[in-house]
Amino acid sequence: MDLYGQCSFLSTKALGFNSYYAFQGRYAHVQRVSMGPKAFQQITGYQRLDELNAKLDKFSNRVLKKDCLDLPDKIYQRRDVEITDEQAKLYNQMKKLALAQFDSGELATTQSVLTQIMRLQQICCGFLAPDDEPLQELPCNRIKELMSVIEEASGKIIIWCNFTYDIHKIEQELSQKFGDDSVASYYGETPQDERQEIVNRFQDPNSGLRFFVGQPRTGGYGITLTEADTVVYYSNNYDLEIRLQSEDRAHRIGQKKPVNYIDLVVPNTVEEKIIKALRTKINLAEQVLGEEARDWLI
Image 1 (cartoon, one colour):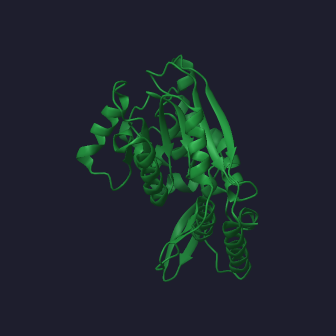
Image 2 (cartoon, one colour; image 1 turned 180 degrees about the horizontal axis):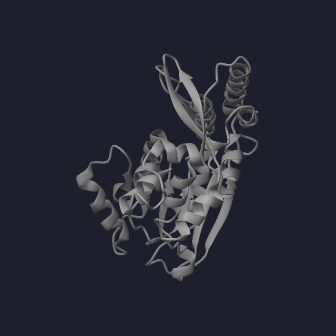
Image 3 (spheres, one colour; image 1 turned 90 degrees about the horizontal axis):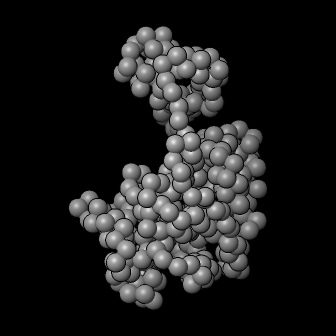
């Protein structure tokens, strides 16, 4: 749908529409969604894409990164994290509650289902932060597995985290073991005037800053982190674009080595489904509609 604005900037005749809503009606499936007293039109899919591509071919050219840059390979690995008894107990309780809410119609929107998936993911990471309630910490083996990965790796390392809790936990652990100067965090609360300085230090091969701990939604766009050839996804964002963009911080011009991407995953949980969706380039937000949502909560 972003194409309408981009093409209209070039010419209102490019796509043959003078109205965004007419463009949307032609190429998108839309359904009305109510959330309390408010209602909005939600895009649930797309249609007539061959027709749209034929229009674009007349005035555009698409070149893939792999076709114009001679970059080293991407290598993907998965490291399983053993779930603790406390995590397993709470995870099963939360899963049963989510299924009951879904079957009763309480989880009627994509966002409400994604919220439940996020809570299941939080438990896998060793905490739970319910709305308007204190954060609950859980015994967890995730930090231990991260440290094992670090011991096996050499050079600088990027660690991406979906949750702020993870960032604080990792920064504390790495500072204690390797020193305060060895780690820097890059997320929403990082002051703007410090962000470029963090990137510059990380990119300096002579700097002692070895670990870049970031949130993909904040640090996954526009910056260069090619000093690292190991990228750890401590916890994943389910947005495909955010995942792809964060991968490319290390895999771009200037990278001379193959880049290792390591996902930490608790087996037989929603994390496996998230990883599978991301690896097959599926946007999770488009897969949790209607009855398909139940499969994600099982």
